[in-house]
Length: 343
Image 1 (cartoon, helix red, strand yellow):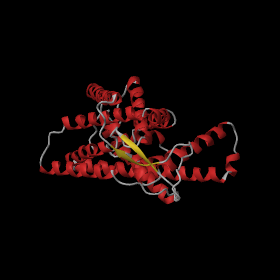
Image 2: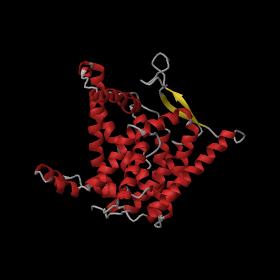
Image 3: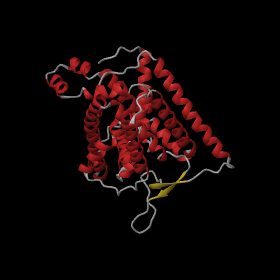
Image 4: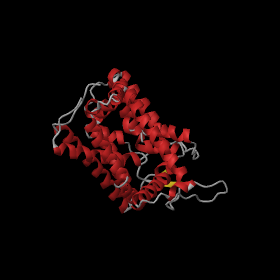
């Protein structure tokens, strides 16, 4: 279902893609949740579902325009162009703020999630025994995931492919942070820090017409890793969208209740007041990533000190996050281009 949009709508959709891409890289925050609260989640699922047997038939028969229209190509292009741009730009700015102002950044995220819970719950009017149980299950899963311990890093290409399939789930399931799942799988630093940095270097070399990296075994190892991760992400995106689309079509209220519970349970992941528990090597030495940052293994959460001025500033950022969600919800409600396609 292609949707008529104005130039302003196209720009706003690109910006939403930027927000979704930035969210996907941050542990505890879900790109799917951004899509949900900004009003294009169901269109995203619908469009991804169109990448099917019929779409490939059109593509292989050379009917490129029909293929583009069939998969709602302009929409997908704008969203993923924004996400890609974010991955190589905005998300690096967020990395800086997370390093230097982590309390306030996590506070804003915490407020965004509280706002998103309000956004979903206020329009949900089908509370019954089944939906309450579904919400409780979702909350239990969110809480359980937030307290799991990470696995060890694994660069096996098949496992990396699997990480791509699982990690991309944050784009199709609101509340499930793909980045946090990668932390649990032990490959967050490998896939979203080290490999990305090597990709930057490779792109820079190509732009300078320097192909010496082909003979660099370590660089090529990272290129194989990020290629496998990318292929897994594409496969996971298509597969998960079909699964979510099917579930939304047949059990829309139950799925929504699970999402409400899951997002609520995941609040523990983005609790602002926490300290890092750093990962140590086999001999007890401190481990660092390629940027020289200490590798985080888990978080220790605590109750804030109300006598500390930073606590009240952080609370202010929580309200700021809520306000941002209210504004986004207002825009989504009043936008003529907001679409809820029938899945």
